Length: 365
Image (tube, rainbow, N blue to C red; front, side):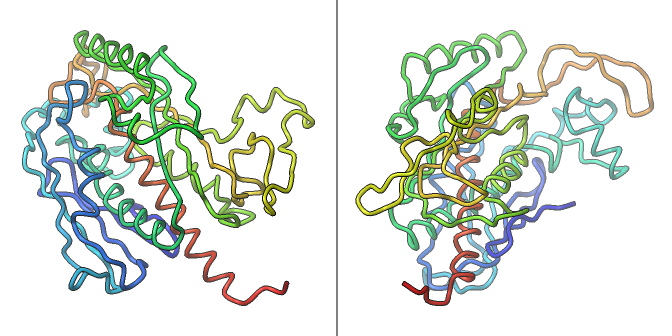
């Protein structure tokens, strides 16, 4: 199973939803970076279950422990291992999944691939795997702030089910995002979204939505021009998250309806710098960052595990009906916000370190 991500800044996540714990091993972190659990815990707190009445009620503190790679408060340049123990696992709630596949979940495909699966909460297919990503993303964010002060990564909800709002990515603030449990920076829309999530939960159902992310202050020149384009790596990172079904950057699919004269971002010199007067490219051109804000969107499907009875089959090939038990999010998006930020930070720090290695020689003026 491929549980690794990155080229220079590399991570490997490990653990299962209802096992002893989950975590990550980070390789390629620069030495001498000040680092402690206090740098990581805030993002884990934003991702953890049980934080509001619109997410899964599973009670996990998700307290992290750094096991290696840090000495006297600074990174050693050696692998960093971070662990979070599972303390509220209830595998007995998944006994039906031992013999039946959840529709649109990974139960059947894992069985088809490996001939064995962990049916207790889905094992590696659970969103709990993302704890390792979020922990590593917090480290990546600190490296980015250290090497390139001023960079900022913010993600937020713009749509839940059929409720949507347009948000200005240049003006959005973390305070507005974190002001409500659904993490939509528009208060009125957020209230409607919260009510919709509660409504579908009471019906034993679930909903999906769209999350937008903006990177402000990104340096120019990140990304490779062919297979490792910055936008291609961002797309891979986002689509590797649980429940994702779509990715678009800049104008996205809407750009296909424009002419070139309408879609091109004109260049001008502003304060001695090359800038664009529009940003339909979403901050990336030719797979390389151009210094403008990077703006992209990710679509998340409704949570597959619901308490409504659904048609399925058993592992022995009989038709059956399954109404899932257990504790599940009626909508994954509120807790996906820190996951998207983490994966964005992992892509950016990997490309930043690659660029610093490639561009080591002095440039001619």
